[in-house]
Image (cartoon, rainbow, N blue to C red; front, side, top):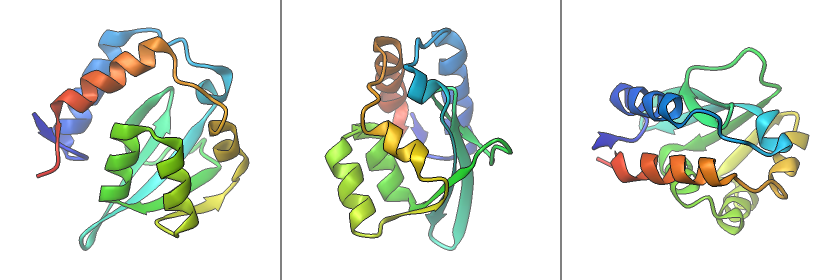
Length: 129
């Protein structure tokens, strides 16, 4: 088990991603590169979503940045419920800086079977504390 967004967690996610191989992402997800600035108490964790995976650090190719808190991101990553994501956005828990069109593409993108399996594996090792 690894605590969400810790160095240990990012290492595990990277290993799982490497082991998973080709994720057969739909075009909207394959092309998506988004930076994340995650508030965790007084700390801000910088991460990015690219190639279907959450990675530590910002990505220079990203034109969109999401600003949100740790709990909102964890819920989004583990549940991947579009209604929950839209609710968080509408209530201001997720702020968008930059190109919003990538997020609009997410509404119709469906994760591949391979990506769903990878998410299940990541979820199985993720703890909150």
